Length: 374
Image (cartoon, rainbow, N blue to C red; front, top):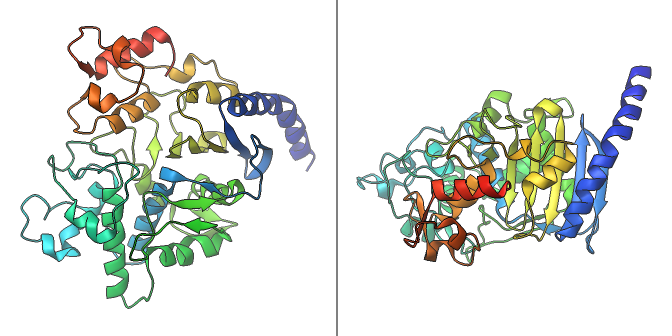
């Protein structure tokens, strides 16, 4: 007991100032909330810019990671196998040469070859099947977007119906995740057929979303009870075939990165669950920030790291978050960005050193290295 009190005194003295500095930075870029859990205890909590503890927040793409949990839980429950073919359930694809052999794991790691679709435009489950355009062989191209998650929603809908369970995918999450954790969502967007949007659309308070992060941090255990097996949850963090910085619905670090075991659920506006098992640390972040937010700045303050170390990388590779942004912008997956793909991104002219109207990954890496930031 005494040693625990000594630890808490030491931790509060050394870490509070770091978290306070990180929260001030977050506030300056229109942050809304920052919570820090260490050893499963809430050690820091701040709300800012009009946000409160009781106010639910849109997770945007932070919603996607629930699908990874759903998939591994469904595998444990015998509803599916991660490496089974989509066409085993979407039987209308059995004779489609491009789609018949794609697996659920490939679909949720965004490496199936199916185009992601337009971010922010979520089709219904049925429409997602018709919008499933194959643009690459499985495992060869990372394609981010809502379509794969809505396809997975249709797979779960059919699996649940075939098992005799009168529930939709959100009902399954309620039974398998939210009820066991005492976790409450405030709202969840639906399509015209009343099916939940799986790529986006969940609203949670910061404390409620934190429960999911704590489950991940504790390898699938909640208050001493196993919700999913550690080896099942670990499937979510195996590198995607076409992107080492992505797992199965979670973003992740690579082994040589400064925080090699960092995994993250992330959504537009900078909604983040930063999960760092080696530090027994969970950071929950809500914000409505884009252009002015720098993840390496936030983490360097929160973790008392050298900002340079937080963005370390080698050669012509991009740091993980810059790689994430690049892959999202690279709509056709050809490894370069056209001016149309870059849109309003201000880096384009500076990165396009040969002025050929196309920016490569290497050109962006050079720009990042020169600027010294993401």
